[in-house]
Length: 340
Image 1 (cartoon, rainbow, N blue to C red):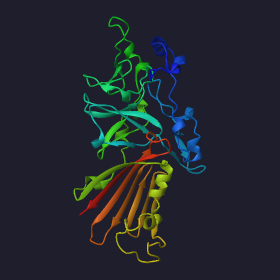
Image 2 (image 1 turned 90 degrees about the horizontal axis):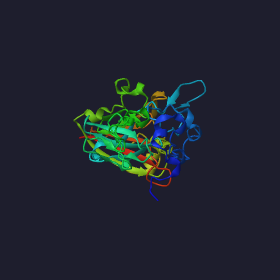
Image 3 (image 1 turned 45 degrees about the vertical axis):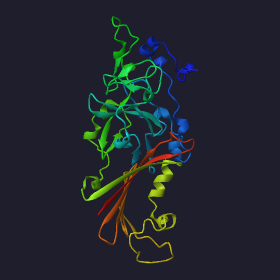
């Protein structure tokens, strides 16, 4: 059977373009949510999502757009944040790339007409075929592999090959568009804002991705690594925030200078840990060997001073990704910097 021939996804072209009652069914993204997520996230109702676009097939959210920190306090909006998708060095401009962030299937591709990376929903509004299985056409547009529909960098359909030249311009119908998300290259990584509403089109001017000053400091040398990890986002972030496990789980790896106290061979001692800032957007903390900073939802910086007067900084950038393995897994970027 044709991989795209699921009957539930088929609709006549005229019904697709002429009525809300015949919206194509969305792929089920909730089935990929890891059980390790907190209850409010795991059981969120997709109908409450703020995700939307001019396209009728914007992916329904598997998460609540906001969760209560405590009753009556501020809320953290998961869909009003910048998320890293992929380092630019690992992307090929000649083809589209399938990625998954926050349970959303997206496609990353290079728009040579605008000289910019783009992030779209990874589904053609026609029959929901993955656009990541398509190609970049000779005009620099993203072309669906199923029926050849072509889209520009704003998600507008520019060509439906089966549409008569002397017939109605069905490709200009808003229901023929694909959701296009705000995208920017920042610190050598492609980031996107997971809300395609027009009000967020220029969101970069109002809210920028987290800034990591060491990336702009020529005194630092950068090494970037990527790893698939077989557990959920929440477990990873909790682990990275836990300095007490370092002398045991990573014996000899993280020690930069002798501690003030010595309790055992591994160096397990009461931690000198002072919170300087704490809120829903993250925290800053001073440690005995340096300091750490968490910028919600996905940037953790650990600064460690060593005896020679040099400084090592480890940046972890992580996000939800459950694409490659059959169990809960997280896709983590790890950028290590060292001033020599």
